Structure formats: C-alpha cells, structure tokens
Length: 370
Image (cartoon, rainbow, N blue to C red; front, side, top):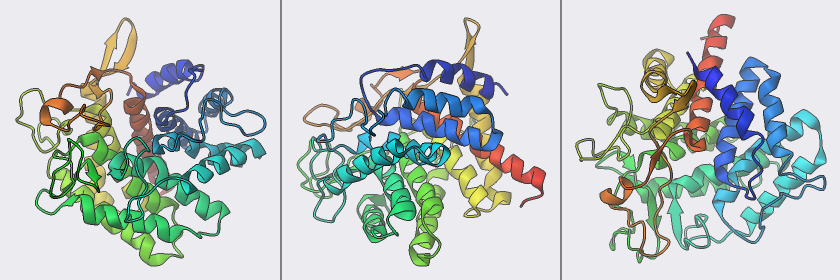
C-alpha cells in the first residue's frame, strides 16, 4: 500500500504551514498523525505534530490566531492534540491552551435543550459537525482533569441529537436542526435540513465512537448508551454502502441523482469508525472488520492516484455547510455544487485515522489478541 509514503510526504509539508488561523481541519490531520505514531512508534509523526503546534501554541499557553470571543465549535477540534502533547512533554503551556478552549465551551451559547449552537453566526442550530468538533475534547478534559463533573451535560446533548435529528424512516441523521425553524434550509415544521450529507454523518459516527472510547466505564449506563447509539447509526449507514465500489455517495441516500459521486472523506470516516469499533469490542470483528477493511482498501485502490511523480488523494468535498443567511440552502443542487478537490486536510486526516486503526488491529493480531 502507498498510504505511508503519501502520509509522510503530506505531513512534511503540512507541519511547516503557519497560515494565520486556528481551525478544525488541522486537528483531523494531527490526530491521524498521533495515532500513527502510537501504533508505529515512528518519531517522524510526533516530530511533525510538534513542528506544527509549535507555530500555534506560545510559551504562555496562548493559542496564536485564536479569537477567544469567537464562540465557534470549529475552533475546538484542533485542541484535541493538546492532551497528547501535554502527556508527552509535561509542558504546562499545552494544558493552559486546553483550559482556554474549555472556558470557551463554558461560555458558548445553547439551544433551549442545552445543546451548543454550532457557532454564534448559526444561532439556535445543532449541526452533526459540531458534535465531533467539541464533545470528545470536552469529554476527555472531564475524564482527565475535572472528575467527570460535566458528563451529564455531554450525554444530554447527544441524547437530544438522537431525538431531534434521527430519521426513523431512513435510519440516518440529518445534517442539521434549526430550533427556531426560520432558516432557508430548515423544514418549517421539523426544523431539520432536507438532505443526508455523507461527511456530516461521518463526523457523527466518529463523535460517538470517540465518546465511547474516552468516557469512563464507571459511568456505565452512559458508556453503554454511546455504544448503542453508535451501532444503531452505523447499521443505518451501511444500508447505503455502494455494493460495486464499497464506498459511499456525497448525498448518501440518493445514489442515482445525476452528479452525485463517491466521496472520499466521509467514506474514510466510516472506515475509521468501523475499525475502531472493532478494536474496542463494540462491534463484532468477524462481521464488521471485513467491511471496514473493504472501505479502506477501496479508498486505496480507487481514490489514490499518481500524478507528476507523487501520490494524491482525490474526490474530497472541499467544504459544505448551511447558511448562514440565504446561501447554502441545503438542496441537492447545493451539495453537489461544492468543489471536489484532492489532498484536502479533512480527507487526508480521516484516511490517516482509518489506516491507524487498521494497523492497531493488525498489531493486536500479531500479539494474539481477538
């Protein structure tokens, strides 16, 4: 497989990036590098994490380029790597940076149900994307540093998402929900967006399996419920797997629509979620591991291309969202109009995470694990 060659080339350039922003995209790739380091013990991956983050975390713990008054769940995700850096180095600046992000969450506006708004420019809205961006970091901080004091808050938010965004008919989660039911993309009766977008579904699956992994087994009912929600959501997603390719469509439930395509980042997120679920014992390896590996190998064989002497990862939706005003109306036409690009960080990072889980399972095999 060409994955490791590709990841090393990608990370070498990525680690030197010092664009004047702090965003969620970097966090996906950094976590992929962390998990590859944990399974391969290759110092290269750790060094690239440090190289990148040393551009962004100052000696006093200030996060360069972060506006602490911009209450936006997308600003939380990259902080997940700070747990790893604090544990590896013992440097207090990383914990101080984490505390800055936690303070932002404590100040974040909420819906009437107690869920975080996605952003202040998206008032009264719950997006699947935001669950992944914020809640696993929140959970890890509570587990490691705050005696699980706010576990109930996290659990309640996920419970509301199951109640408000899940389609019993389609067995999928909608991209977003508008509590006020006023947005152009929202159904005026339900407040739900009108389509099932693959990457948002991927974010949600990853949030659920990560919450299960991070949460303490001592809080048994909540820990168990994350697994049950995960298995239910995954079962629904797999109903829509393309049988010929093994991958999933950008608009997962509308494979026949003209212009729809097999999208890379969301497919990689599903592969990661399945393989991690197998490793953690949430899923039966006998039943699900071949599916996760099938998706990963399909990405390798169908989405990796060689051009100009270098490997590239293709067919990644560059970005998709809803609003904030009359643009991005959530229609089929909208989701299929966003640029399709290659080597974009969300796709690469999700693929790195999926491959790391594949390697962890193989390492367990070699140790004689189940």
